Length: 249
Image (tube, rainbow, N blue to C red):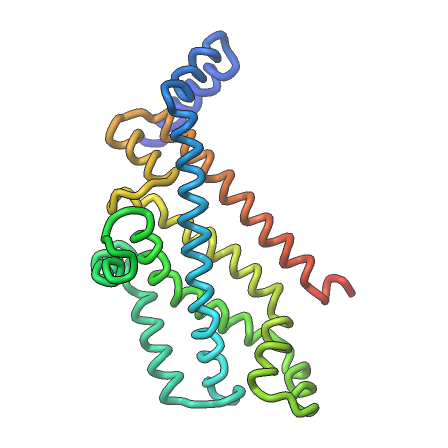
């Protein structure tokens, strides 16, 4: 039934877009202030996702470096630190986002002064994304050729220099590919902004599609969300290719 309903909606949309009712269709969908609502929703979606991703990487990169560096046979092995930090990261990764959102409301209140709105949602999003990003960073660092690390160590490069000048630059293509995955994953959480009176395309789709039974606006909001995802996905992928030394060779 759900598939037939969706097909019917798309059939109606297609007929409206290609038939005589095109002008009326656009007037209904983009008129009455809806064009402004779409523009604001796109901006809010990009703002929330970029902010959440940036904060997640700001904290996730150091955590990922520590996880990598303290692992067995790595730069500065430390089993207790690696075990405790890994356990904490795994705990946060296993908690569903909607539950984490409820549990971390006091944190949002302390950081931004409120539990509601886009600013608070960015806090929730960042807390949920940091463990995910940390593991992706750790995985990217493990992909660096051991020969490159050994060569740098043989020249007397210390751990900090090794991380800053060798590991992270060498892992940059993998880190950028991971950033594309992280951005898309984080963007997938943005529709839940409606739970805390936030905004964005996901919230617009839910508000009109579920609460006002306007499937047309819901599908258009979803389509715009897909476009945003594709733009950022391709941008990160292009950056990853441009920085991959192996491809340039």
